[in-house]
Figure 1 (spheres, rainbow, N blue to C red):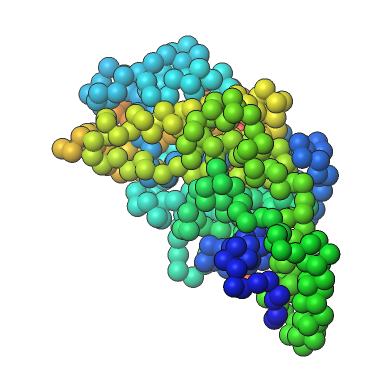
Figure 2 (cartoon, rainbow, N blue to C red; figure 1 turned 90 degrees about the vertical axis):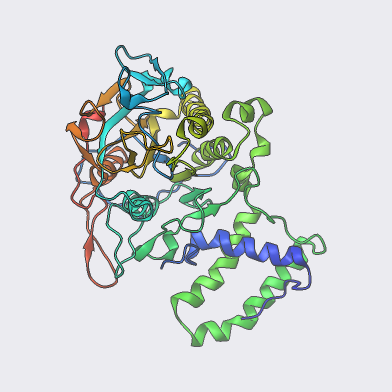
Length: 439
């Protein structure tokens, strides 16, 4: 293959990297190591590849998933045990729902409880971070023989895309270890954004070329490549060609403004918090407006084995500000009913406080929160024993949780997709939606 971009210019190399990375999520180059309305930015929604549904249809058109990586403590956030030794130094506060208390570190979300469904009976099988994150993202155990797709690619595969220019799924601050499209194929891989404040980098055409000169060079590349494409007909070659075409279309599109936080008023940016997570939540809102189907925003650092009472409060308040601003903003824009906001983590923390003033891993019970997308607000679902160690009422597995997300989207969580080795898989993996969460 030939290229006429200036390889002596570092900016050209960066620009090529941008084209490769962005088109990857749209066109089929795997980036992770495994194979409403017209929109704010003037795009025309185009639902392609949608699967007819036999299951009840949900209200959500899109999902924003806030992933608290490292196992966020339920006791210091959404499931405190006030008046017990279990609670340690963390105080509790009242919420807007009578009788329901949160930890003192999440006051903004406590003020929004009439919009939230809090699941206190989440449980999983493993307390090892990598395996638990994998299960949370895919609904399956991590095994050597199969790379399962994460939720975004599942949703893309089963319900299509809403914007023909922007990617269907975007992963913000998720890191290189994020599980991508797996066996669904790299055309479903989420487009990664490392720093939401920077968005997508190197997106302008070379300054030394006019539009006509750039088009002429790309036409020359196409002419040189025709013979090669004709003799080497395979998905990789086709994807490489389409990569440049689609990346250039995105570079020239007004829809690209969805990634640019400088378009937002300073007052709005400040409301989300001037940090990577808060700005990631704001970027997620903009992408949702632009027609992106699934946006995941990750926030790490929750593995509090030591000094929890000193290290967690600031992090929890950062999460509280970003998540509450997102829900409030979506509601004010009239988007919350059609946007499912999910906040979860891979497992919980122990009820006992260890000798290092921290909490260790505990997969037996943890919390998740949902809002919007048809979710019934002001709801507390499930409960643990008095120590918070085990679930006593209405247990919810990761598989149930993922099936619930599918239900909210109107997706058949039992629809089978066959992997390249002819094995059938479903998005729910045997889980059942928690329909009591919906109004």
